[in-house]
Length: 423
Ligand code: PMP
Image 1 (tube, rainbow, N blue to C red):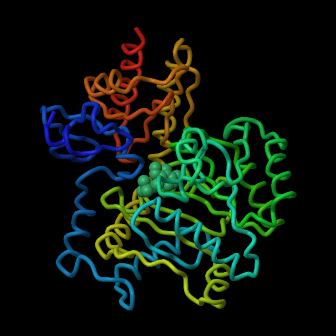
Image 2: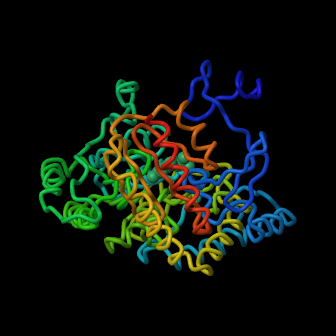
Image 3: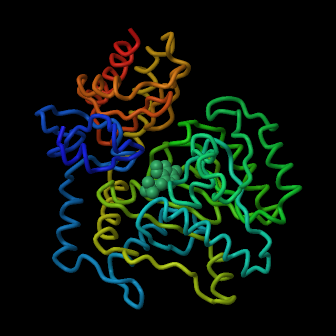
C-alpha cells in the first residue's frame, strides 16, 4: 500500500491511524477497474450509484473535451452559458412536470442543503416563519453536511455524537410495507399524528422516494409515498424528494417518484446526473416555491456556490442524459433486475443471510451480523468484483451497460465471497 496514501490521505468513513487496505486504480474502462497489482475487476457499485454508462465512455469523454476547448468554468453570477441552458431544457423534459426551476450545485449533500434552505425561505416568504423544522422517516440518508445530517437516520447517522449541536428534527418510523408486499394503511398513522399535532412547525418532509439507500437499502411501498404527499398537501408541508441515488433509472423508472405518481415540491438530483464523471447536483422546485421566494423580501434566493452550473459538468450531464434516453436503459435495468432476482436466490437459505431483496438494478443481501470489511473486501477482489458493503448490507448496483456474463461474475463473486467469509 502506498505510504503517502496510508499515512496522509483520509478516506471516507475511515481511520487516519488504522486505515483499511486501499486498492489503487490505474485505469477504468466500461465496467472494469484495473488495479495497480494488474487485476481487472468488475465494478458492482457504479462508484456509489453514479457511473451508469461505465467508465471512459467515448461520448462522455468527447462532450467534456469539446467543452474544455471552449471554456471549463465561468462564474454563474451575472453570466450564463449554453451548457447550463441546454441541460436545463433537457432536464425539464424528463423531471416531474411541476418542477420548473433548477438550482445547480456541486454535490448531493449541497443539493440537500439548498433544498432545505429553499423550504425554509419559502415558509418565511409565505408568512409562516414558525414552520422551521423538518420531518422524515428513520433509516434515511441525505448526505454528510450539517443540515443533511440532521435528517439522516439518528442511529446510523450517529446523531448521538453531535447531539448538542445538530438541529432537532421530527422522525417517524419507516414504513413496514415493502415495495413488493401488501400495503398496510397503518404505516401512515405516525405521520398523521405528527402532522396533526406539529404541522405549524414543520416546513417540509424530506424523503428518499421508494429506495432508502445508504441508511439501510430498503424498498418501501409506493402507497406510503402517495400517502405522505397527500398529507403534506393537507397540512401545507412541502415535500422534498431526494432522488440523488434513485434518479436516472436505478429503480426501474427514470425517477423513483414515478412509482407512486407523485410530484414533489422540491427534488434533489446528483450522482448519475453526470454519468458519474464529475461531482455535480441540482435542486429543482415548483413555480409556487420559486415565485413565493422571489416576490417577497429579500426577493432573491440566498445561495450561490463558486462552481455553480460548472460548464464542463453541465455539458457532461446533458450528454449523459441524452445517452441514457437513446439507449434501452429500461430494458437493461429490467434485465439486471431479473438476473439479480434469479441468481441471488441461492443466498436466501444461507444461515448467515437474513434477507435478499431486489428492485431495478439494485440487489441487496442483508446479513444477520455486520460484516468485517477488512476480511470480506479482499475476497470480493479475489473473485474479480468490486463491492463495498456497510454494516449488515452487501449490495450491488452495477452500471446499466453491464453484460449478462459480467453480471453473473458479480453475483457469483458475491455468493462465493459470502460463503468463504462464513466458513
Ligand atoms: N442523498 C442521497 C439519497 C444519497 O445517497 C447521497 C450520497 N450517498 C447524498 C444525498 C449525498 O450526496 P453526496 O455524497 O454527493 O454529497
